[in-house]
Length: 292
Image 1 (cartoon, rainbow, N blue to C red):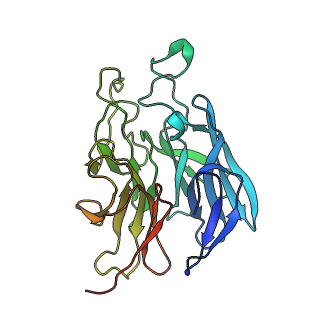
Image 2 (image 1 turned 30 degrees about the horizontal axis):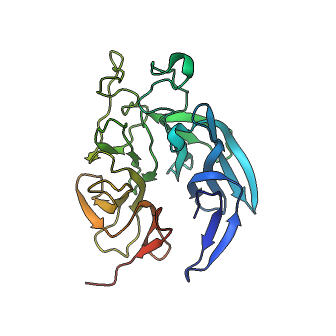
């Protein structure tokens, strides 16, 4: 578990907490490389509104090594290098947010004009576990906080939309495709270039509900839920503050759990239970199947 103040903790099955490593700036993504004890983590390096910087590091045997640096960051202190997920090809995948609300420049000399995109911003990146290879896997994600693979090799991503209030998104990621950012429909937004095809989302949520974490259920402890998808809706706006369920493939959606203040992320534990981290309260909730 990571905290906004830069620590990463280990929590055992009894709820005991131990500091694992610290010294990061707002770590956002954590993922173990499958079959290893190598923990990959995204965080900020230069935490400034304009010209910020983020990185991907790996922790092995207690030693922190920076793998990929110079990643774009940190619009309104929220957009950064975010969720990490390892794919069936053995490569890592990392979501990186956009540097603005809808692609506008934040620099004083051309404020509000369409900005030149950083090659890696608003995208999902694919990287080799040793950090020597990095490429854009898909583009057009304004601020995808969480990504997750299902059991059939499909990658899903949440996305938070611009401040003018279009619906939030849950996406099936299409390799090589454009998924929207920075082209939106508003008075100050910029039209997509001719010939650009934008992949629509699988589902949308109410504006400002802030979909954040996503995980797929690849265990057997929840009967009938194998390969289902769970998403946290983080904000205090109506219809948020809950965990929603998607059927395998993402066709159907329903509320799965409520009673949270600001659920920001979730994962499936080795015991088959669903663990939900609440940003506002600092509580980690455990959701387990107890029988009919």
